[in-house]
Length: 141
Length: 109
Image (tube, rainbow over all chains, first blue to last red; front, side, top):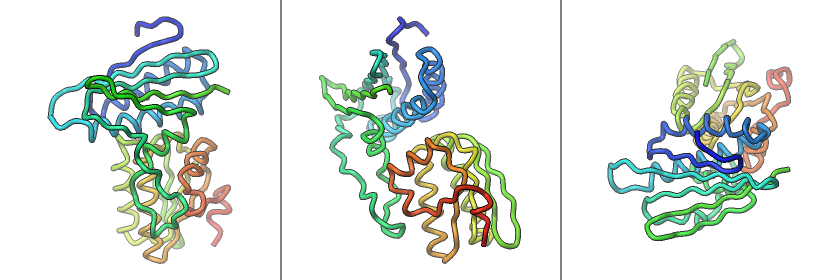
């Protein structure tokens, strides 16, 4: 991996099996940046949710696409930016699931984006040209 | 991910180890559905080895809980690690699942 001390980028293809590589990358990053295991797991979860949605729903074609994930360690904050060229889609507009529903009424899906919003301290979507950009920030305790 | 099954007359004890994520949630789902289709309506899930779960995995927990509730069975969890408890809390799962502190409490009739 080529990186300077405080920032790095991971490029993945639009295939779900790439999620294993993301998990592994984050483990290494956790060691490099001395991040605690809880934080690494949170970042892994957030990335998995965001990337799964892009990979499964973001493309109308059967082609290979690259998703770029930028990481910056700002000392008191981790900044992650996910950039894809899939169909324009703002995940922050998804309504939150009703987590007060009892077992019979709880729908089975819909938690992914909600978990991102809850685990990150800030979630921002931008559209630039043909790119979707999801910017995430996590304060480090 | 590893799923181990121990059955007794009273319940099926399933031990879940490792990660449940988008890449293997189907495997976990199939394993649990098989336990149910084998006729077990009281399932105790040892989560002490569960290190990581994403929404794909949470979905399986929900499916199992729904099936066992509909069958008037029981689904009990124990040994949840703090990181998993956090995800369960955020998702509102803590109030819809029967969560026990340890195996002894979970296996009491």
